[in-house]
Amino acid sequence: MMSSFQTPIGMRSSTMLETSCGYLLQELQMIWDEVGEDQFDREKVLLELEQECLEVYRKKVDGANVSRARLHQELAEAEAEFTHLLLSLGERSLPGRPEKMTGTLKEQLDSITPALREMRLRKEERVKQFRSVQGQILKISAEIGGQSECDDSSPVVIVNENDLSLNKLEEYQNELQRLHSEKNERLQRAGKYIDTVHKLSATLGMDASTIITKIHPSLDDPFGRSKNISDSVLEKLKCTVESLKEEKQQRLEKLHNLGKALTNLWDLMDSPYGDRRLFSHVIRLLSVSSPEISEPGSLTVYIIEQAEAEVRRLDQLKASKMKELFIKKQKDLEDVCNKSHMEIPSRSEMEKIINLINSGEIDHANLLASMDEQILRAKEEAYSRKTIMEKVEKWMLACDEERWLEEYSMDQSRYSVSRGAHKNLRRAERARIAVNKIPALVELLLEKTKNWEAERSKVFLYDEVPLLAMLEEYNALRQEKEEEKRRLRQEKKKVQTQVIIQPDNFYGPRPSTSSRRLSNASINGGHSNAIALNKRISLGIQQLESNSINSSTQGISILKEGRKSPVQNIALRHNLVSQVRDETASVVSTFSGPISP
Image (cartoon, rainbow, N blue to C red):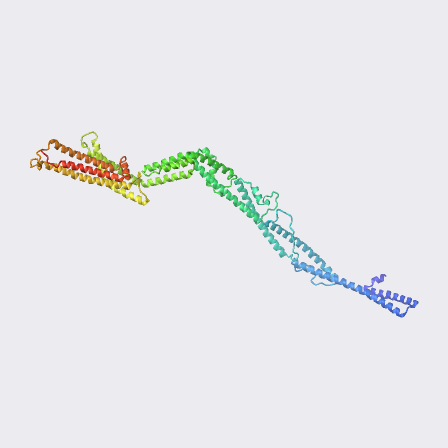
């Protein structure tokens, strides 16, 4: 038995077969001989034994073929898996693996198994890397897309094991890096928006946490979970910041308006410094723009309500003083108009405005602004009238001097030696100089007045009387007076000539049949009539002057009456001239007859 195990397998099997089968066949022959078995039966049994042996061999060979095929399949599968792993991992070969397979199937399988095991380990490691990178990508993408809803659990990752190459891993890593950059950029934007919301809320006196939580709870999460940084959340943050900035601007504009209103009301009513100091923070905001305001609580609703309440209080106080202020400004306007002899606004209109003030149906600020504007316009017009008014005053004074000179010329005792006579003589010289300048002054006034009216397209009024009409009226009256003076001088000259010629007829023939002579009384009476004529002429001239020359007291009223009833004024002048002419004619007729010696 020991020797049989030491022999080769093939030799041992054939030897055993020969010995064991031969021995058994000899033993079977001996049994058949002893029994006397038929030869045919013996052949039959031997044939059956051969068939059974062949069947047993065939089964063993089939089993061996199946085992060989299985080994071939395992080897092929191993090689296919190894090749697939090389392709999926993106590697061309594995160091240590033979390029050509040699030896038995089991030897080939045993040679590829370590390399296959190493490739499987590499695949597992690569899959872990892919799963980690893809998991982070999904998580960041969920945060950016707003799908995380503050859930930090790991997302389900499906790795494509057919492509585990380093290039693919690098693509995922680049994508992850891009997402990290986008996430950081979004977090920075969200952080800036949140900081801006906190600052604006502090300035406006609002609760920043409530505002941010309404946008998304993750933005104000005290547990530090990931923030939702989706486009919609960032857009809501942006809109919230813009809304708060707009609210800040609106409140600042409201405080600007309230500050201006307070300043105007304080100035109008001379409010003390103590009242103004309470709202100094509102006044300081007048010179500050919206971006410059960052102090907490500087634009709260409470401050605006306080300022509004103060404005309402001052408005009520102002309403009680508005009538007084309006009357004061009205007086200022009337003073400006009176100084420049301009037209004063209608008193009925002013009374209507006072009634509106009493009823509270008028805007006080607009009313005072309108009055200030009227006063400004009146001052501007007064300034434009200044040169003309100075000339008018000179003209008025010259007319007064002319009237005085006429009265002085009619005084029969002006040359008598009396106290103060020399002063009157000097004044008369000055008056004559001034009177001689009147025509040139009137012409200059006419020219300047016409230029003024053409420049402003309005009539130049002097105490509601057109100045041009006054000047033209004065020129007409002066011309009539000059003509009347010339006529009177001619009449007086005729009278004096007749008086001088009449003594030559004392001793000559008398043209009349009457033998009566004029007595000395009648002659004296004739001279007295001449004196009376001179007095009447002087009085007529004086009356004519008083109706034509504008003095500071009576002349203006007469010219105004002339403007109101020019027909009556002209008729009055014609009656006066006719009266003077009739009296002159009567006196001349008195001296027309002969005078007796």
